[in-house]
Image 1 (cartoon, one colour):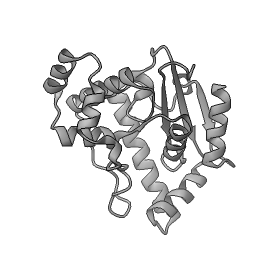
Image 2: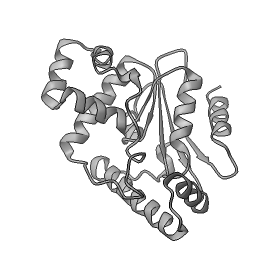
Image 3: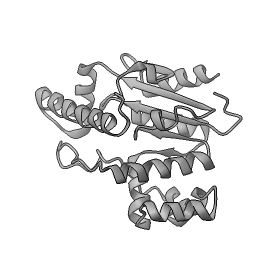
Length: 214
């Protein structure tokens, strides 16, 4: 991957691995935007987007994302992770219709067509598998480390409950990927770089990625 040209870095991760923090820090280090499900949802909600509206945008202007980004004030910091606002440690509800998936993919393609960026999740490792200047990263961590992190982040007192929550979210994410792309997130062959967060801080993981990029 060459950072002198327009690029996309996709980061998929296990819940509780610290991968989202790594993605955000990496974007900051590289001086490019960071996007995840929350940003896409915010765009959809603010603009009432559907497939027809996106097709209209595409027909009017090949690179339509910059105008839409300004319109929804995406730099205003309103987007948060879907996991941040979950009551207690409830598993997020399924909201993965085929139509919604297609719309998210079109938004992502518009973003990547317009600018370099770091994208977390949303099957982006499949969407941009043929992008000429990409880096696909998988971030994982041992279950005990994930449990500890989720207990701290979500205020869960029991290790058993934290592990149950993690496994339910893992299954939800894996089902999402299999349903919409036919592939499993956990297959390392889909990634250029696999990082274990065991004994690593998020900053150390970012440094490792930057060294890999060169």
